[in-house]
Length: 116
Image 1 (cartoon, rainbow, N blue to C red):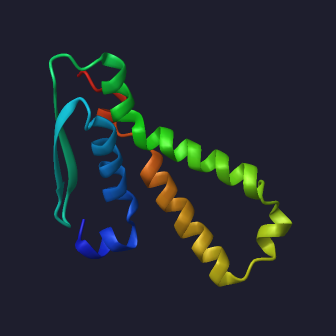
Image 2 (spheres, rainbow, N blue to C red):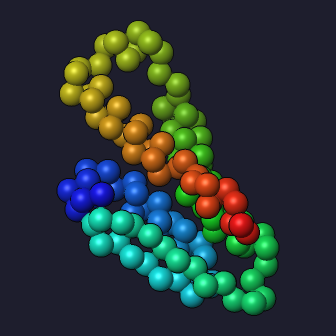
């Protein structure tokens, strides 16, 4: 992933930063966002609760679901006729936003299996 792709799809580094924020109270966090590979490594404390480890690994998914629920509550679910009435520019922004949301919220294999 290039620096340009990180600027165009900020969801990848934001996904990793969400892991870091959620893990910070129970782990030493090492953040690497160098433009080619965004990655967070967490060195968990010995007394870190299991639930905290699971929440930190699923934090972007939980935040993404919360964002989706808030958008539905405040804006509703758009109808097909409502989407058809959008200008091409607005439809493009909607598609880009949706793709970024999916990339941000989708849990990787390591996120779904934090213990192995």
